[in-house]
Amino acid sequence: MEAVPARARACVAGAAVLAALCALPPPAGTPVPWAQLTALAALYALCDQVVRRRFGGTFYPVLLAGAFLLPPAAAALVPLPAALLSPVEHAPALPRRVWRAARPSLAVWAAARVHHALDGEAAVDDSAFPYALLPAGAAVLAFCLVLTLLDGAMHAAADRVPLRRAWRGVFGRSLAPVAAHGLAGLMTAVLWRSPYGPVAALLVLLPMGVSCWVFAQYHRERAAHQATIRALVQAVDIKDGYTRGHSERVGRASMMIARQLGMDDARVEVLRFAGILHDVGKLGVPTRLLRKDGPLTPEERRIIELHPEYGHEMTRGISFLGEARAAILHHHERLDGSGYPYGLAGSQIPECARLVAVADAFDAMTSTRSYSRARPVETAVAELERCAGVQFDPRMVGALAAALRRHGWHPEVTADEPAAGGPPRQRAHGRTTGAHR
Image (cartoon, rainbow, N blue to C red; front, side):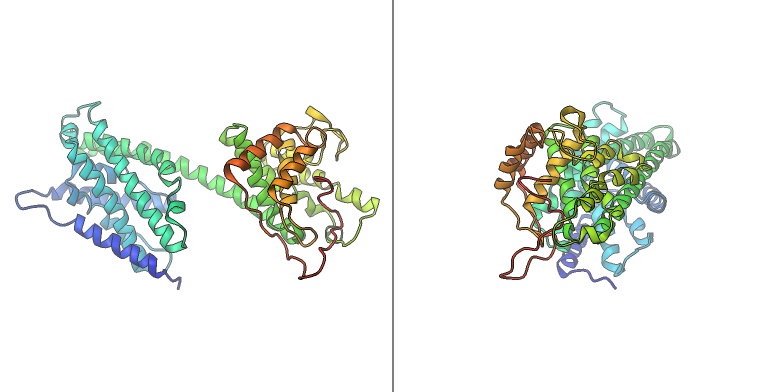
């Protein structure tokens, strides 16, 4: 049985207590719309079951519609049936089920509280557009903020990471999808109170269901892409243990350069793939050559220098890689034309390959391996700058240097270090002579 850390259990208990306080009955004389509450709770439980089973995500429009239609205490009860009925995949079930109930309960209570304070219920009753958008927007912000705070606190408690790191970027990433769900929830609430009634309100959920399906398909495809890349990288790491972790770091450095150059997110992702897979062709190189101690013969070096072409062929059928395949093929070309496999020079080398070449050389110099000591980041950058214009693209070197000044770099050991007092082993095909070869 998977254990839940004590700090995570305390987080769950605290959220449960707060949710119970939020759901306390309203003051005497304040009627509870039990019919609406029951209908919304049942509808949310149904939608939650369908979305979780079919799409593996969350579905907030009904929950936010409850925030727009119900008093805060009543809105806090809407998520409870869904939490009680939905299956828990991992043990222990009780704290996970309590968290699944308390988390949305607190978020919808906060949204309803903000919406009520801004007199949003009257705007919904009167279908007063665009005035209804202001309280609804504020409620969505409160809903998203509470979810962010709770998720970050749980991440910090369960995984023992600093709170600042646990919360970093979560609100920004979740705001757009929650806002879309909030707009659908507002339309649902307006139609619910209109002469057309709850049946018409259900029609709003159909396009949202379709959009959830589309997003689910996208995420499944993305997950398949990631799994494909992970499998290839793991295979390379197993075969060439000296460079374990190198591929992931080259992908990270490639991404830093691409972002520094202002490339769009889609291209940044492709170049990250290029960095991660740049050495995948080593799967076609005999293991005895990759692990050979001592110098290579000219024939052995020619065999190893075929790995970019092997990698290009191996990834031929992976359509989502796009220009990453060109980077895999040409990342050992040099600006002066003395590289391999085709001896391209200058602008003949694809931009993506020039970018990955700098990232590859940088990590090779800054990583401690069993055959070489890591160089300081400043020394590695100076070496890249010295070779810029001859071996490396000066624009890529400058972008990496600027990104490092902004974000820093944390080199890692990728293989066993030499025994204390002993010299580093000599790598058969040393990665760095001068800067990189």
